[in-house]
Image (cartoon, rainbow, N blue to C red; front, side, top):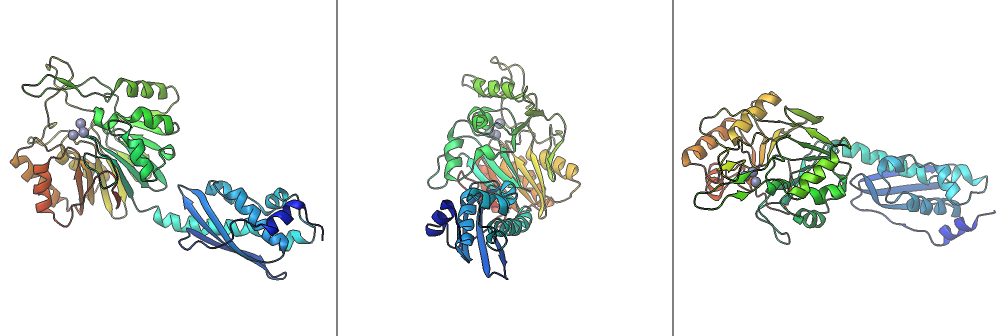
Length: 403
Ligand SMILES: [Zn+2]
Ligand SMILES: [Zn+2]
Ligand SMILES: [Zn+2]
């Protein structure tokens, strides 16, 4: 039998033989008439094959095909790997003896089988919402914190970055969480404050393909004017405004002046109607250094995700008021209950009365998961935890939450 050098090389030194215990997909192939059988295990991360292992019983050609297949497919996107054919594997080996083509050339078929089993499974997993906290005012062990907020959300096969924190800290925390920011399909800015947008420049250097969603007022100049202190500029940093402007001609920016459906079951509220008389923006916010033009932060928006468990509301700072936000979320989704609320509620300056009323509304919406963080304020967080001991969860940088 005439084998090419490549076949002999892979047969004598085959790569990636073995099994993967926690495999994401398993496939079989073989030709019973010749006795060659193959079982393939795959590990998938962010839709890419990060590991492929196999057990094969067969002739040198069968072993070489499997070895070559793993070499070709490792690192590929699953869709690309599913296109790989047995002929391409044989070709990469410099060809196979004629009589071996049909019985031993089974590697790509086995891989395809494994990818299909992954696709079926991942479709089920698609319906779970995974949220990683990249930036928050507090951090779990091994992570760093800053005043700011950023969530990485995986849902329905999409990756959504919600806010960016205030600095490049997002990059370091993302790395520790194995979050690949370049995989972002969408970047959502809840509003223009620096602690939600300051990491945008660094993020866009990685996630150049992502669509960016924000209200046109987000890049506005704005100040916080606390009594007895000099006005402090809290707008989106200039460099981030620049990266944003650079993305506009590439067709990557979507302005959300009204509710915007971004993926199946995923929606942005756009500006939120201010209805409740006991809610305000939560601080002394102005658009000028002299603090004469009051900033209503109309750019404030929430992300709504309609999961099988119920409606999930993701907040940046909820400058529109968390109750106004929940009301609007319920209206837009046509649902009377809200399953989860997560993010900043900006209640740090809120009166006891406002906090009590907010708790009442949480009860009315039958909230089952509450992850209030960032600028919610210790007093409000304590009161809410007391009212909902079972429902509250910690939302610090480094936390990974399954909803
Ligand atoms: Zn804010
Ligand atoms: Zn806030
Ligand atoms: Zn904030």
